[in-house]
Length: 450
Image (cartoon, helix red, strand yellow):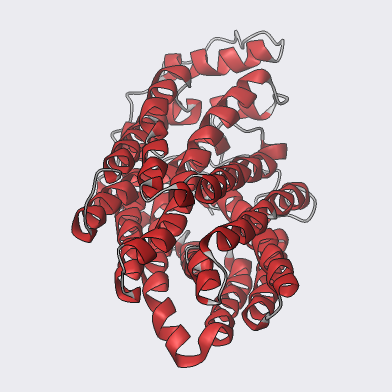
């Protein structure tokens, strides 16, 4: 690799990497995490709403599968477009825009009277949801000091558990309360539209992105605020006159760059991991409430079990957040994916209430810990000029699986029941665990500032 091509940290990046964790970092992490939790709440709510609507509207399995999958079609498109936009117009702008889009569409879903209108709105919700997650993880990673960057991204991902738990509580307390309970759940899901204003005016733009776009004064101002929060004097060394800001590369050029000689190996491995994890996670967790009802549990009991399974996500994130800076990215991700594979096989063969609950909680623990590690490693694979694009397209590749998975569940259940279904999910987790070793582990290393 030539000196020109060698990964290097930007000036803003070097200054940020030297800092301890401060209240400024906490503001970025918490502000992004709340958006992340609201995203999870929306995704989680639809699994409970589908179970209720299947009974109230007498929906066929194919119809419920499409209600789940149509949102993931939107997410696949949104993830790809969101990453491209974030590299062009900024991380914060796209983050706020996505919250606004899916918040308004979720609120409007409360007014629908049939499947077609709900499908249209769920597609729009998916556009916003799909764009938000890779952009948010890229955004936080660009502020995080190198020595704790992975840990902070796993903590960011842990907000997903808070949002899913909120969805489970709404599903348990609100949806069964009346025939219109699902409408009230959708109205609660409109909160992100208001929170978009907080993101737009309350959080700073990524200093690394600003510097890459030639906005050195703006980048310096952002970094200075973080240095002041750490009790350090902002850098006063004179800077050379910056060159004219490089224009953003055309969209096609940025996508082609992901498959250049330098990045094609990690891109292929990353897309395969994202695809397999999405297939198994969304195939399982979107359908768990409905599967429990099909096994004879009433709606309230099904939602109660799902709530306990959801709570197991929190210790999964906590363990992954610790291990990711001890074992590294690849080892942590691989171990949690192997644990997910084993848990899926056991859950598929569980028959008693105790084993269903225990294996479901194990699946939740390992799977969500793996998600935290995956979101930590993804932005680290690419330089600043490609980071959001790379993260967005990896997420987009994964969303293809999340479209297919809910549609595959009725077919797989018909072929061999729950044991066959979860054996397939376990197989996908195993493939993802092997593919992890094609990634680059950048534990403690500075982000590539190119």
